[in-house]
Length: 357
Image 1 (cartoon, rainbow, N blue to C red):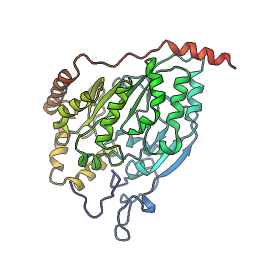
Image 2: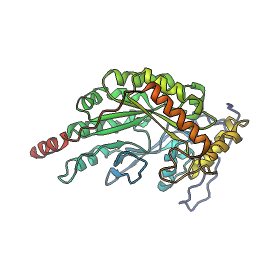
Image 3: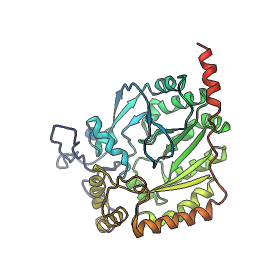
Image 4: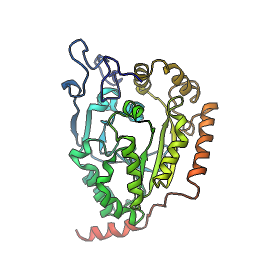
């Protein structure tokens, strides 16, 4: 892996492709390298927090590939900067690029907890696990400043409502007190994304996430406190981290994870352009081989929109990865499983809260 002159340190995307929804022509290069050096402290590269005021916060998930029916996202955009992130393609809907803009222009839904409570206390609402978040990370750096995720967890506990968290940031341990309460009533699952055990690769692939050591420690700490942890070995990028499946599974099992899953990388929309640019700048000698392996797993394309296929891929490479995962799960997770969500408490606590008014 290389970090040549002109490589943006501390960021994933190295370009800023124009949004298809914009009526302007955008310079895809975010910095004039002739005038300044690349550094995340440069004014043009600093993170901006942009307040938004949504009217609702829960989103129905229609995809058959997603196990939960509802999701919510307190932030749009993510400073973690994971180069492969499928959520990048949501940023153009807000008038921003899926590239560097996605990492530095973070939309903040400061009224998320209020909106959530309004939904959960409705007489018509029936308890169903909520995927928190599913698009961008709920414990990204913005959470230290705004605390929206914690405020939402307090609402979930107040109404004894089931929730599934997804993160790759050790900041989740800040909310250990609330997570223990939720876990005591089988109201929470925590999914920790584990992509690689190679810290050098992690720094390029996911530049502002928790380190490998921090992530493993997070799995261990949560598990030790009785909080069920699902280790998400994702995305699997053939030619880059697929050889780590066994070691990732073992590391998660050794730290007490209750189960594991995986998804195959898919580079839909602008993510394909952004990923390829990054790959050719960081690993030019391996770029074609990796890109061709990704295409092989998705019918000859970098992208894949096919339900039932896109998350696992197809073809020989996808089959090998699927078999490796199956063996790793049998070897390290035999007899382990995530507990079922408790859907029975919410109605009682919702009614009790309504009586207070």
